[in-house]
Image 1: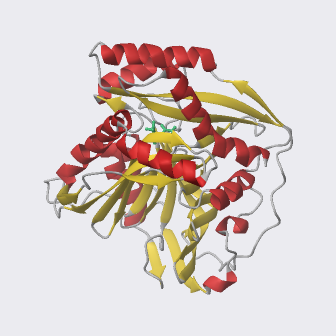
Image 2: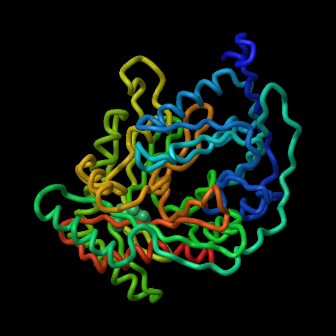
Image 3: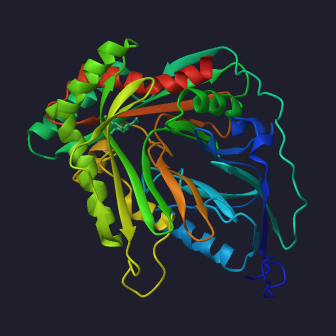
Length: 433
Ligand SMILES: C=C(O[C@H]1C=CC=C(C(=O)O)[C@@H]1O)C(=O)O
């Protein structure tokens, strides 16, 4: 590194991290209650997860290699780190949290935020990690913070395409698919919410984490949501992915929902939509694995708002997956290789992305891109940022919410619009409850 004023070579200060075990009983049931008012980062599912605050440094990237470039910069940072870790679990030691745009050309680009404090819980273990540059940070005792203020009245407005225009876009996509131009495309729509008070991301994540316990609830750099879809988890050589595609709205009546689950499990339209998503994931994952396990039939995932067809794919990372004698790819390098799957783009990928550009009329930003965390050894978890919203960095009273639907030859535009409404519900309710 070079000092811009003197031209002299400088040595960057090393990252110094210390992880200590804490009594899990001293932590609140909902880890997001620890987040301070001036922002924070969250990655929680059920009682487990990571919350973090303070920003030590950030890595920003853009373009087609945005995940790979961030991965390389992170590896460089941790290569010289001084690490003391008394706990040795996934998520202990140095950790960075990231979110990346769906599209390679998006101005939203990508970011890895390295926080100053991370609190984690996994089963019966809990820990605090402090991070600093060139020095050991003072120890931190996490404590529940005052509850966030409500965002107040919310006014809604349509995004680039209102309901009628979006239905027409779905109709156009069905026409292209029936004409044999592609097999599947995922079309998304946005709605804008304007809140009376500046939106505190903690308000949103607290509600999502309580209501959507099977989802990964996240808040990273203004992107908040609760997604049911895990792009990739890499842990000690084992890779896991939860692929979703194929959806039915819940009715609120348990008997009717059970009947709907059976319908979904046998719907040829939804099974076709699901199969494209599974194939795109497994085809992209296979080169990195010595073996993979892909269940033959999906299961039905029950969420409070919708039912999904779901397949949990697992794989064992090959020792020399890149074929160059180097280390196995990190979770972020895998995210780079897997994104975008047909759960968020379509099949074939290039044709689907071109049709998304043509029909959606908006930049998806970081919606439907990878969001998650990475540790010093490259292990980590990256979900697809669905059921989410992006807070306007220039105006905290404005957030864009997104929802998308997989379109195949048998899709009905009106049913897809209703499905997109069901997918918007978690974020709408988190803002207004
Ligand atoms: C693109 C979204 O959902 C994807 C994930 C699960 C089910 C989907 C579907 O059934 O269309 C979508 O592929 C979204 O929620 O915005």
